[in-house]
Structures are given as structure tokens and as C-alpha cells.
Image (cartoon, rainbow, N blue to C red; front, side, top):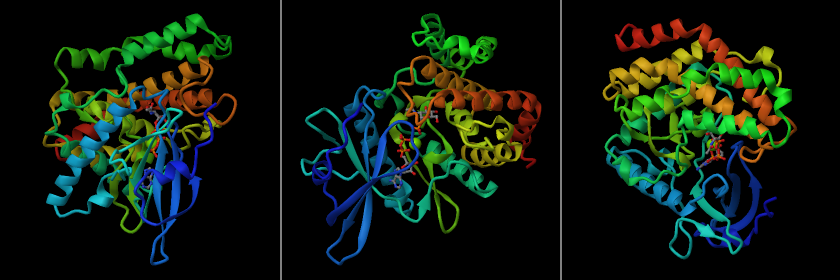
Length: 372
Ligand code: ADP
Ligand code: GN1
Ligand code: MG
């Protein structure tokens, strides 16, 4: 068990504006501990900042992770200013500590960081409209474009082999072999589902290794709730959660976004009757994303877009199942079988994506050929 955070001591380490009032847990992330901290400024106005305790079980080298985030956000900041944008809203902005660092390490070895709170914008678990989806896609595509010239080899791999689906499959096989918590017998159908898809696991990593797919700077965790939607105009104002920004494939970003955004229900919905892959959402995202990256996307990437959606969904479902079998140590869980419920929604989505595979490809072709 992690200890309760040492508030207000940890707050006092950062150069926040105003007098500290209180702090409250914030958001729905599965990995870090996120809080909103409230302050009273000299003029009496109240404002808030984001504080996060980095999950150092997941991110083994928080210093390297923070070096990546500092490098990428500073780079984005310059471009946004050059384009006449608002850098405090269009990228994450780290608040430094009094020691001039971008994180604070507690005596007990926990790592904290703070960001300017992007106000007048929200993240959503499930999209409310096709416009939101289209705009979120534009934001992820734009993010990709802005980082197109950033030298990928200058970034640390914050989680090695994060989207190496083949290696994740090997880990899965070892986990079922070990079956430490004696849970495998209760999830035979789910295990079989993964095994039936064994042949798909290495397809993208092999293409990357053989040089058919380019390595780019990618986000690698393009969930719908990692893009902030502006309250006034519905624009995808800022891509957040930059912990996994590192060398990767554009297909990881596209595929994982489709996995997360096209689900008609919550990722952990227990009633699978209401979990569906939504084709209209898929269309809106694909259109918005392709419009933003059309100049740089390669034919091989285009060819694999639809497959990447299936594979990233498979990888994620397999990760949830692996964590369930491992005793729920990686993803934050709030109830019994939480990871298993999450795994089941992913497999339901894959089944429907497999049924819609041809139609999904037609949507890509039409877009690329300029017909929609
Ligand atoms: P996790 O890695 O655990 O998913 P995130 O970095 O995605 O954590 O943060 C969790 C949630 O906190 C986000 O979904 C978003 O709603 C909110 N959030 C994070 N950063 C900011 C920010 N700078 N301004 C406003 N809200 C934020
Ligand atoms: C985690 O941090 P968050 O909640 O945005 C996970 C992603 C998974 C996702 C599934 C670092 O994302 O890879 O796809 O949960 N992040 C990490 O919801 O493992
Ligand atoms: Mg997140």
C-alpha cells in the first residue's frame, strides 16, 4: 500500500501562486495519483493546479520520464508561441520546485510533479458527439505533426517495449503457465480468445524491425480521456498524459485511440450487451486523424491502420487479463474482477471490429482518395 501523500509539505515544494487552501483527488487515470490543489491569490481569487504522484512501479526511471516531458513540452511551447497560440492551454506546462527542478522526490522516494491547470476544458470517458471525436482526432494528429521533426533517439524509452505486442504475448504465456493466483481456470474463454489471435501479435513489431514502418515520436496512450476538449468551442485543445511519449509507431496512436474512443460504453462496463464498436465514431476519428497527418503518413501505415485498431485493442485486453492473472498489480482497480471486466469489453470490441473490418477499410480508402 502506498502511504497517504504528505500534504501540505509536498505542495510547499512547488512555486505555486497564492496561499494553499486544500487538495482533492482528481480524474480517472489508471496509473498516476492525480490531485487538484486549490490556492487563494493575493487579489482573493481562487485558482487550482494539477499535482501528480508518478507511479514508479510502472515508470521505473522517473528522472528520465521527467526529462522527456520537460524536453517535449518545452519544444511544443516554442512552436505554439511561434504559431501565435496560447502555450499555457495548448500544451502541458510544468510548475518548477523552489530547487529549480521539474519534480520533487520525497524522503520516502515518491516523485511528484505539478502542472498548470487547463481550465475551461474537460476530458471525457465516453465521447458526447462526433464533433468531439473529430476534434480529438485532430488534436492527436496535430500532436504527431508538431513532433515530426523531433529526433526520436533523444527521448528515453520510459517503458521499454511498451507496445511490443509479441513480447506482451510472451509475458501472457508465462503468466498463464505460472498461474500464481489460481485464476486461469475461471477465465478459459478469455485465455482461448488470446491464443486464437496468437498469429497477429508480431505483425506490427516485425514490420517496424524490417524497416517497413517508420519509427516516430508518438504518444502511445491515446485514450479519449488524454485529450482536453475546450468547453466553449469543442476543440481538442491539448494532448495530456505525456508519460509514454517516446519512439513508437503512428499505428500505436491511431489503434489505441480507436480502441478507447469507439466503445459505446465505459472501458470497465460489466454489461457487455451495451458494449459496442461504434462505426460512426470510428469514421469521425479516422477522418479527423487522417486530415491532420495526411502529408506525412506512409502507404504502409495507411495499409495497416484498421489492423492496428484490432491489434491495440487485443494488446490492451491481453494486458488487463495478464494483470488479473497476476493479482492486479499494474492497473488501478476499484473492485473485484475489475481487470477482468476491462478485458472482456476489449474482446467484445475486437469481435465487432472483425465483423466490420472491410467497412472500416473502405472508410480509410475513401478518405485517402479524397472521397469523404
Ligand atoms: P494518468 O496517467 O493516471 O491517466 P493523467 O495525466 O491522464 O493521469 O491525468 C488524469 C486526469 O487529470 C486527466 O484525464 C485529466 O482529466 C486531468 N488532468 C491532467 N492534467 C491536467 C491539466 N494540466 N489540466 C487539467 N486537467 C488535467
Ligand atoms: C493506462 O494512464 P492511463 O489511464 O491513461 C495505460 C495504457 C492503457 C490504459 C487502458 C502507462 O492509461 O497503456 O491503454 O491504461 N498506461 C500505462 O485504459 O500503462
Ligand atoms: Mg490519462
